[in-house]
Length: 184
Image (cartoon, rainbow, N blue to C red):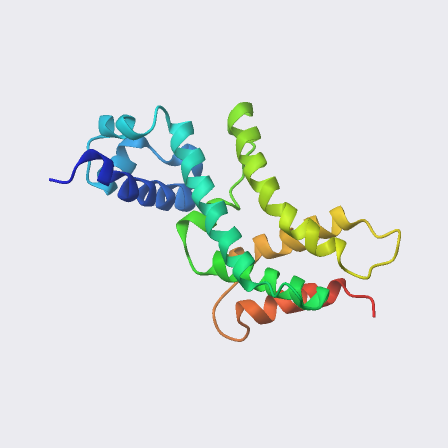
């Protein structure tokens, strides 16, 4: 039988699947443990609470998507092309059906205020990548770059709810979203 420390990865994967499928509230520790091949009480060897487990899964999702976006960026590239690449990487990560990435689009309103603040802090650090990309764009002086970030990320994050493989791929959709922001 594997050592308890080696059970952390299957536990995180099982939790991510449950959180992505039914939300944080609907996922029971018992179901997560069963899917991870352990007893419910064994989860507490790794995490003090469900909130700690949620935070760990969310952090891994942020890490995955940050890595994908950073790898897509050409440091010397043209600003609009860089933004398109980042948007495409973001959307490809979401559409890859990684339960960790899917958790990033979950509704956080029903979580405790302290956990919500913690997760929003993780998300904000990720969104700072897009803030930096938007700062580099040649936009009108009065353009609200924060609102543009929210607009773009909102469109990207909503895509998995309607997307069906076929006509357009993730990169084409992301390019379309970014081109809609351009005014030239």
